[in-house]
Length: 349
Image (cartoon, rainbow, N blue to C red):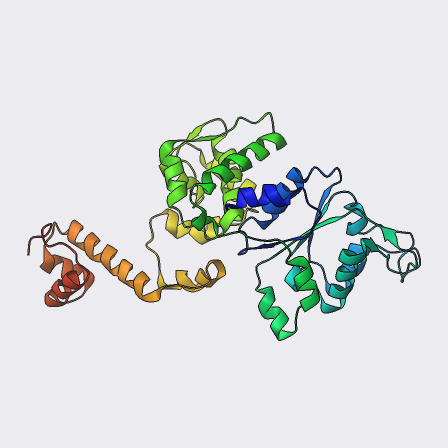
């Protein structure tokens, strides 16, 4: 069963949902879809458990009464109450402190809370959706996540694959993000993607997952509002932020300023790449910020194939000249060509 059907099935229920997936894969989008299809009249309220200091997260979620602690000069509602009759999305639930996990379990069982410093229970009509990129079962085994809370949350798990694994979902997500962006700025003309443009999007690795796709949409609006985006535009202007050649230097500087806060490759980081600088070994230092692992042997072999074929192309198939370009012996190159099954039919040995 695909994820869209899972969302439509689980959305009308009131039971908790646990969304798994890598960072940036779109777990919050899943929570938004669940809330949209739930028919609930209240708000969708999102809380990132990893972003709030442990000493503040309890009052942030449960609220507090006047005088509960120094500085509490008036009553304040927490995220639980704000999401009454709606949905509370707890992102990165694996980072919730153990001391607070027991209180969350009590909320799930009693459907009520007590504000910090309060004595009365506040009944809630609440739907909770949680998300994590961590393996909660492993955390349960290590004692860093409560087993009873895990089994209470894991009633209906949904796994969100990385964007690269989702094939045509990329185009569906692109359409959804473009439509959402148009709703925010209805007077700005919508950019469109040509067939070559969508082909480039489908071929890209998407190390930043849906978060990176969202940034591409933002860039498309800034650079190509009301225009069609080609495959070359996708490669050079959206994925690497090289400026379209039609812009003046003044316009380019303005665009860099407008996109400086977008997650992705900055102007400084890609300055050499834009001018055609080949990748350097140190470029791989950030690999594990975007991927969990690498097939090192296969990746290095792919690089060898590309470089050998490129050397043969620029030397018109002359193996001796290509071996000089690659700084290896002619015999070594021939052996590598055999091993890597690089056809000799296209070369002049």
